[in-house]
Image (cartoon, rainbow, N blue to C red; front, side):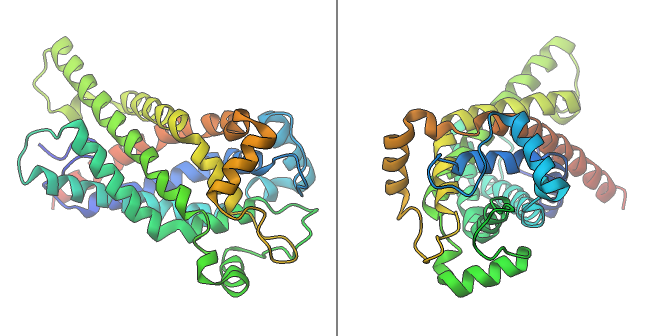
Length: 314
């Protein structure tokens, strides 16, 4: 049997990277405006902000479209495409390679603990590679017509300016909570794997068929599994995302950061906004990420199957 889900593959490992890259691009292209809204909600603490106030997700989309046009809704699109495509490609590649290491060539299914460790290791590696890209995406998404600093003209200008004004360390702002968000990917993939095994087991008994697991599940199954596992991960780890976004804001005009570190964000957010402050933007996050996870896993599974079929026919 070929590697199941995002599981160990006995074939061409690069299938996982290629399928992940296609899935990442498809997800960003379809749902980027909701990501812009989420980021602006996350950083708007109601105090000395250059961002307008939005009542809800719908109002935010309308306000951004009216004031900034389509360009505003797709601000940060280039780094989002690069980040998502590269992240998913690396993630699926690392995840499957790590799972192969734990399986030691055995065809037996890995335990939930091994799935958790595999996902955590893969997330850590991806985080270290891609943090500068996500930092630029956040900065570009927060630029508005009333922004007082010189605006970044684009992805590469932002990278150069951050490097020049804030040094190499500036590109890794928010890396602390980003590494804590390793737990997000670990939870997401562990829940996905376990739900996937349950679904295959249920269908194999119900339909009394002899197909392999991959053949029993269809696109709708993968969509439901992807969305369900993503919602579980979001609800558990969302405060880390708020902390990371707030740390990644552009410094003030005098060069000083709004927050000195993760602990400062934690204290200030709780002091002025309470627990609700750590869940700002969660509605737009769920609206974006539940279907995004569905798209990602459906595209990933189908692309990988097509690549595997093409390889077998050579």
